[in-house]
Structure formats: structure tokens, C-alpha cells
Length: 135
Image (cartoon, rainbow, N blue to C red; front, side, top):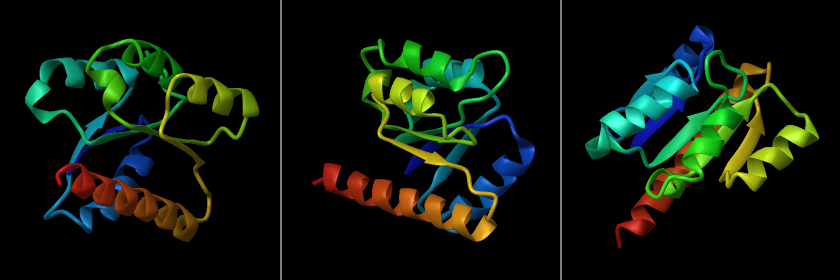
């Protein structure tokens, strides 16, 4: 399974790598610091398109909503599931992301155990979905 993580926070990046890294035999993780880098990765690595994207909303250069607006209008990229993980529990952010076709939205918990559990559930869900799609 290939996962593109678009996240500018170094601590969050390390946590995601650690949590997803527990399944390192089956998971390849690509990290981008912002939406612009994430878009460049998608454009420049068509052979490595991710099975899903884990997207932060609040980032410099190109934020998550800007990224979603571009990818949701692209013939190939719009079919890659995007799970938003953010500190924002603003209803307007959730609605905007839903309108742009996200596959999921969760608010980053300050409780590491809860945050880890959320990420493990997401990984398990998309791993299972990937297996079903290969049948």
C-alpha cells in the first residue's frame, strides 16, 4: 500500500511514520510538506500514485483545501481517496472538504493514544479496501 502524507508539522510526520511504519512490510509512505509538494509528487511520480492521501488542511504555500480543489478536477487524481487529518473541527471546513470529495475527515487528537488509534483504523480500513479492489 502506498500512502502520500501531506503534512507540514515535523512532529506529526514522525508520529505518522512511526504508526504507519509498524506495517512497513506492506506500506510505503511518501511525505510532502504542503499541497504544492503533494501535487508535484502526484504529477512527477505516476508510477507511484498512492492508494490514499492523508491530508492536513493548514499548511503554507498551498493548504489542503487548495490542494483538494485542484485534485478534485483532475481526471486521475480525483479517484485517489483523501482522508483529511487536521486540528480544525470547524463545520465549514468539514463541509468544504466533503463538497470536494474527501473520503474521510478526522480531527487530530492531543491524546497520542487516540491519535494513534485513529491512524491505525484508517490504515486498516484502506488496507482492506485495497485488498478488495484487487479481487
